[in-house]
Image (cartoon, rainbow, N blue to C red; front, side):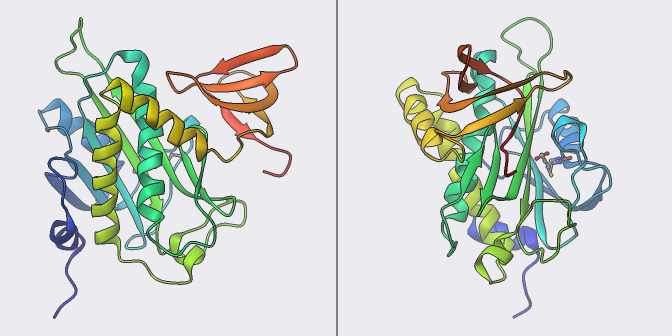
Length: 267
Ligand code: BTN
């Protein structure tokens, strides 16, 4: 039997009610986030996905670019239409990073994956997944045309990374090649569950607890670099607030931050 294409392999394994469909699969795009946003403006439903083999202008956080070779990674963006107050939108990438952890835990990893706040997923201290959330709200509430695009870059079968990048892939971590179709389908299923949990208060609380338990730096001293400023804050990570901000115990007392980049002396 011929090997199924990536969209066929996903369709064969997908068991969600809406996350992951409809799917647009592209050989090359500028950025899947940009293409998903354009589609959302034209009415793409919640759960719609743009998946690409190659991005010519892949976007990372803090204005960086995101590079991944074709046929080795999963590079995709999901359209979401959350029914959440604006201050809870920042929980979406946290829920999504838990979904990635759920999906990759099915593989024989040498150590449980951990989340570096807010939404990097790491194995053995190396990044295997990054996310970029882009929101569009227009006009007055209830923001009927509002949407969120969640971009996910997951390192699956790469075997080489530039020396300056602290990255890994599932293949490097497990020693085995990982079929991408079933992995994306599983990720959509976990994403649907974690994202739906954000919409009911008791489940939202449980999700925050699950997230805090998987934080890489919980209880550790870190430095937070806040974007667009030269400011840094050092403190011990205590978890997250109700809206997903990073809670730090600093020498000046408890503080919380909605944006920034965590570093430690070792990374
Ligand atoms: C980061 O860690 O810096 C975020 C990386 C996000 C990359 C993904 S790949 C799919 C989607 N399209 C983009 O242009 N970026 C995101």
